[in-house]
Structures are given as structure tokens and as C-alpha cells.
Length: 439
Image 1 (tube, rainbow, N blue to C red):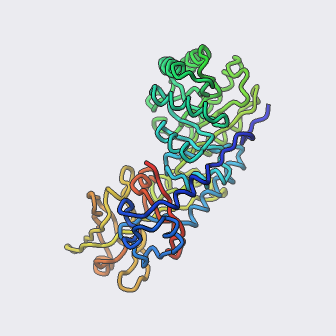
Image 2: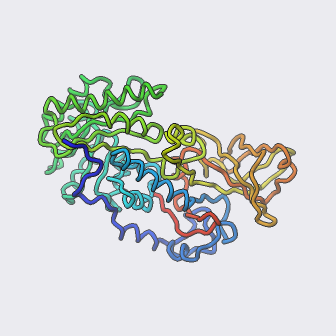
Image 3: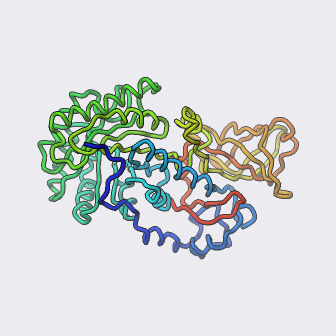
């Protein structure tokens, strides 16, 4: 049977009316960085004013998304996935932003990946109908809710992990108690010794698959995992693990474990090794049903100026394009009490710091609005509301209190969660819309 990059039938598109409703939300004190004089306006009304990020009354610190970089990244991954024969379910935990989900689905995404039932609830509130839940769910209340969602919407498809016999027992008991009418689709998760979740051996995977087969509430539809959590992951260990994953799919199929399944799911892929996923998945032989080769990268949507700039597969394949960092946090110099030091009004409450400290990239003069490279500026540490910046060269004398400093950020997942409403700005600083997040 042929593999499939996308599946026809169930609509993946988000509920546009629910997304449109976001534009009617009123701006107020909940949303930091926004102009105080905008209080009471709807988000849509504020967007229509097309204010300047720099002169339109926004208060610092303020996080902005680049409209151009965002559009570029969405288009690049759509084209890349299509070219490599992969379906794409970008991980929604990165942004938790329905406006971005809508754009991802419009650009060909099969569905959206979630990590928790709470995230699935957000997706369902905005009508997402294909959800890959990359975790084993053993919470009875969450399973009852999943059963009710499946019962209420026959076009809804949810696929979730299983990685233990005990987990299967708990899932089955909760779904039976809920009177589930439709079986919940599951994939056996393969892990690695010392990694995160997932079975460690193929024999354990077979035992979990047998436990699923013994239930009426669960249906085995494939295998999945996450290669980036392999200890000391490199090209060799990632390729070897991916071949174990595809080998498990082949063995399950040969044993008849996917009998009656319309489509076999084989899924992997974060934002560091999707080239390896494409390469190994391309080696999959024909199985008894079409194969949905599902990639789940999430951080690509904004990329970054840290971890993913270093790790992106496009560094290994520059001929296939390049992602562009879409985040910039603008902070102001609020103190210059020592030679060679400056303090910005942005700290741990505003920026990610779990992987890398912010990177000063550009200075905007408070005197005339001119821009210059942030040469000689280095963030050395963060307090809750301050960034400590060391200065060398001419900036040790030139940087003034009031100047704006544009910071590049690392790890978008921990940036998005700090900002409930994010301006989307064009290259000249014109804010054209706002992205609402739900963490």
C-alpha cells in the first residue's frame, strides 16, 4: 500500500468563528506592553489603528512577532514537509495560540499536536478536529472528557500514546466507566534507556499492544516517539532509534496488529532532527494500509536566536532554506549607575532563560529613533524585572537611559507562555494584529 502525506476526509481546519471572536476581546490591564490608552478597545479595533510599536504608546518591555518571519517560516515548513512526503501536526504547546493554529492548518498541517488534556481542551474550544496527544493519559476525568468529545463529534480524531500495560488498564477502565461508544486511537510509544517516556524494548511494546488488543475501548493505529530525548543524541543514535521505531511498525503490521485500521500512523520529529525523520521514514516499506508519516515539530513557527538557531536541520541542509527568528523583545535602559554596565526593564517575568540568556541585537535611540547594532552589549544575568547588561567598546559611553534595546530570545515555548497577547508587527514596526495565547 502507498504511504500518505495527508489524509482526505476529516476536516482539519479550525473554527474560524471562534478565532474571529478573539478580535472582540477588550484590551485592559491583563495584557502587558499594550498602550494604556487602548483600554476598552477591542483587540480588533486596536489592530485596525495600525499603531507603531515604537511611537504608538506601547510600554516596555514589549514582545513583538515579526509578520514577515512568521509568514516565511509557515511557508517553508509547509513546502519542506510536502517535498519530503510527510504529514505535519505541529506541536501546539509551543504557542498555545489559536490564530497560529489557524495559519498552520491553512498551510497544510494535518492537525495539531498536544502534550496534555488541558491543551486539547483549548484546541477543542477552537474547533480543531485532528489532534495528536503525545502522552499517555491515565487521568480518569480527562479520559471521560475525551470520550464525551468523541461521542459529540463524529468527525473528531484524537490519537494518543500508550507505553505501559498498567496505563492501558487505567485507560480502559475509565473509558468503560464513561460508556465510551467510539474506541480511542492509540499508538505505542517507543522511548530509549535514560530518555523520557516510552517502552524501552520491542518486547515491552508488544506487551502493550497485546493489552490494547484485549480492550474494546482502545484501538492500536501505529507507533510513535520523540527522538530528541535520546541521551547524547547525535546523527548516528537518532537514525538508529528511528529505525527501531519503523521496525516496530513493520513488525506490528506483519503480526496483524493493525488489521482493520484504515491508516497506520508512524510519528516522530521535534525541531532538531526532522531531516533524520524524513530520511528514515522514506525507507519504510509498504504496509497493509496507507501510512501516515507524521512530523510534529513546533518551535519552527517562530524559530529563535538560541537553541534552535544552533540545532535546526537547515544548518545541515542550507540548500533547502532557512528559518527566520520571529521574536524580538524590546526593553529600555532604565539605569546606568556604573561604567560598563546598564540595566534594562525586562527580566525573568518577560523572557525565556531556561536555555540561553537574551541576546542584544539592536539599539533604538530614545533621542531620534535611529537604529544601530547592539555591538558590545551582553546580557550577563536576569532578575525578575531587570536584565544586567555589560558594555564594551563605544557603547560603554554611548548607550543612554531611555534607549530601546531589541533582544533576540531562545526557546520559544517559554517565551510565548509569558505573554497573553502579542503584537504582530511588520518590519517598519507597524502592528497589524495581535496573537492571543492560552497557557
